[in-house]
Image (cartoon, rainbow over all chains, first blue to last red; front, side, top):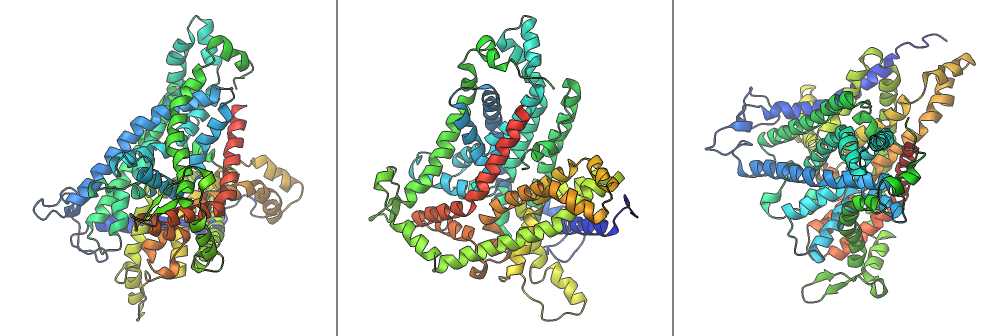
Length: 289
Length: 308
């Protein structure tokens, strides 16, 4: 029974090596986005030229038309998707949590299906339907937006529903005992209690959309609809300049920002309205089997 | 915990019957039009006709008129043809990558959830970090490192190696390592959650009853975490089976082609082969149908438990 609760050195070592292996390649990619030279493998000093460099040679993220357009396209899609998918998902979560009628079960399955469908299947499905049935919707931003909302809705439902179950109905019932109408109870009691989940949903949908590759690529149209991940994919093997690393780094910073906003807002609102110990990790953990 | 004992009457008393389905309608309509219909379109195209003039697939929406010719060709190629090799290779890659995910991921998840002590939150942050980094960026980083004049070869050269290999020229192990690198965080996280949930008291009880470290692990911890392992495997296998970007970026050679690459080729890179692409997608779905059902059932079960 020796070393019962002791630190197993082999485990520390293995975990440490794993973390190094998982993060060092990315750290190197970020490092070379600041390289003062065109190489992505030999370091020539620090520079921000690949981010904001000269408009004249149009080689930086800010001035290269294709990199800049990828950045704006990704941001546009993420913001549009966030604004549309979140309200639809929240309403669907409330509806599914309380609707006990005949259509409730099939609707619930319809909501779960996109979560378990491989992205490539969804990509093919959407591509074919926009190509043959909804051919009035052009490939590019419109199709990509519709696709992104479609895969985002279910994530919102899962996040919001977890919180709905945790809240229960006692607070609304109390409000109605005190004279509120059902609608007032919902607007003035339930929605504020849902605030942390709402903000987490906004941020997570934003992150899902801006990080998406498969759907964006299957539904891509004109060059202006190329997003950052699609641009990284098409450029990675063509001996690209460090500006591609800079574009990837910008995407990483935006994603981390969105996640931080979600985490902080969740904590803050959780304190204000109680029951906010439900961490984002736990939300992901709910997918666990 | 608030109870939901009165909820059955509550609906009829507090809120009108149509209100809750009304909330669900926009989402249900959206998913019907943009998930169900597209899903059906895969079948309609795979079993449709080819327009002889435009040589373009024409969907057949009525299953009574479905034409299985293309689908049969794809199946013939799957059993004994070229596609069979690709399918076997895909299964092999996924199998080896999953084994490596368990071998590497289990100790990592175990350490961070149960043994990391005071610095646990830092370790947790470090194993979560890959989630915030785009998959394509992570792959691009490896393309960088493995390119002929990349850092990996620089290090090898510094140790005096000559005759440096081109890592990106179509090596099986490079693609498999890419898959492991890409998906292992998604394996570790659910496993971490499962291991984290094991009550210390259970392990103490095992020790009080005389079990040593190894016995405690194999007879208590491992069985209690098995569902976490299965869940993590399902989560990584679903995207691995449909992956095409990892082999394309890390090799691009026909030698490492997976099912996903074939689908990508017929859908994204040609205009007239949509029916073949759709038939291949159906084949892929048969491959992963069991995984999808397992995943679906488990999310559903988790929801039912949370509702109570």
